[in-house]
Length: 187
Image (cartoon, rainbow, N blue to C red):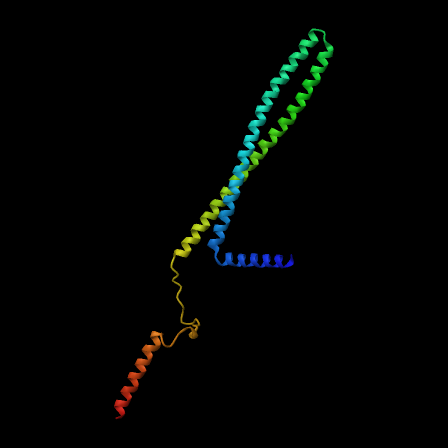
């Protein structure tokens, strides 16, 4: 596995170098990551909203059932059926515990929704910042580079090919003309 780890690190390093040398591509990669994060955050919010609604429905249904058992407790006590009243109270208490658990789950879902919305806002702000930087990078790439070489800068003369260099050809013609003129004068 060491070879794979080394190869993986090598590829990551090369990718990082490539992205540093091509900042517009790095910005595009960041934008893609932010889009994916935005989709995941939206998916989480939608999922938690559905969970919250389901829990609210269950709590309302449970509240009706608790109210029903509360009335039964009162009815059994009024009729002098304490054995039924006690069991009805136990059922009512169990339903209340279940309701408290559901309420806690609903509050947790609400908190996750709030956190998801905060995260979504942060992702969208970051995405806007990156899009602005990407537009600036594109504008900078599209802008022509008017940087001229000064007289004191070094030039790589080996890059010129004597056969295709127009300046070389002009000098050769001028030098040839000058030599012809001198020969004519000497004759």
